[in-house]
Image: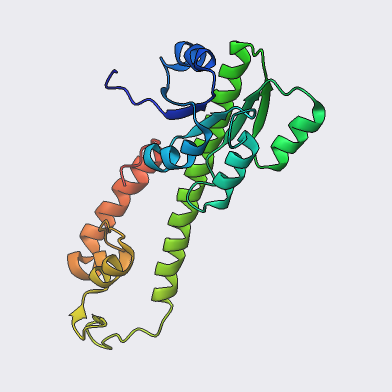
Length: 220
């Protein structure tokens, strides 16, 4: 196996020949975990946490429908996409499979080109869904930080320091950094520029700024 990351995929079929075909076709891009016993699927999924499952329906013991149902009943496994790969080709069978929560349904004998395209499509959708969930989480955390800043904040009327929850007085930027994780860049406003450096220096800086803007440059 190369150092390059390969998504883990599980293939479940009681026919080893079908599993071998899938490994030969997909093993270069994905790490394939094979399973021939339907009653072992749940435990194996909990151990290897595949990104996608290719699941046969007609298996001895527990059917693929039942396996899919058990997966969807588990909170930590229900989002793993399941594709049925089966010889059951009737429309009613496909509808039943989708009702059990599968994201796709491919009939045997399968064309490996179709399998590859559908596997890639559903893995990309899973990745995008995960990224969306992560961004949503980040936005929720940011909103929590904003709500924390919306509380009544004790601030010194002279030096403008802020008292934190432990009773210590902090500079404004230090307090906000602790609450939100934000970083600050520092500049100087026009009023402070004139107050601390005088009108002559302020006029020179403003003149240079106007010249940069006129020439299309902006280094601020």
